Amino acid sequence: MGSDLDQLVERCRVELLENGQAVGPERRIPPWVDPGTPERPWLDVEAAVPWLRQEPYLVNPSSASELRERLFRAGFVVVDVSLAESPEDPEGAFLEALTRGLGFDELGAGSWAAFNDRLWDFLTGEESTPHAVVIEGLDALARFSTYHFLRCVHNLLSLTEGAALADVTANRQIECFFVGEWVNQQTVVHVEA
Image (cartoon, rainbow, N blue to C red; front, side, top):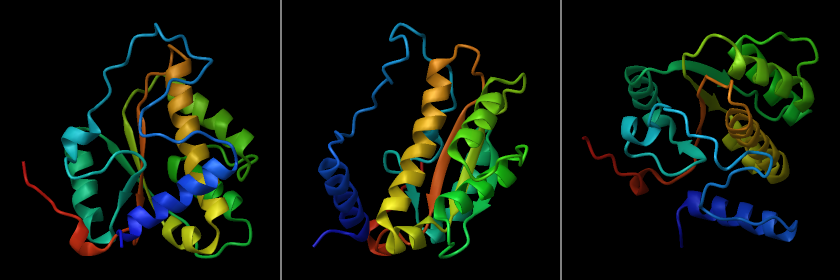
């Protein structure tokens, strides 16, 4: 029997495949991005936190403090976002929490379109300090509604990666980390560098 994380990943993979979406570990460039666009010199998350698995970055609560410390030392501004348990509108609550956490204008908060507009402004603004968004509470949503959990994680990661790749004026790195009860504590091994 696999770990809780393996079971969740497999459940997500099956749901995506059932909906006709390809699933794979490789990073893909969105079709609207020129493949010749040079990569930006972002901070290396895997070097800063070597025990992380590949995206999406799922982190146990017992490792959250170390995660925050390592990200801060690497040069990220660490933003904490917490999702209320069992909200009536999970996606709206998720977007409102992100909007508040990132300090975005709250006009239209709760919709993906409004969040995308604010995110685009955030990524293409003059400020270039990289941000790490540490999100708590999505593990409860995963148990309550796999559909809403997948939409929240997929849409957030797609928007942050897509905006950063699509516009040469995007000069701010944003990375997302999801803190929750994802795996059995014995399956995570920390190796100090």
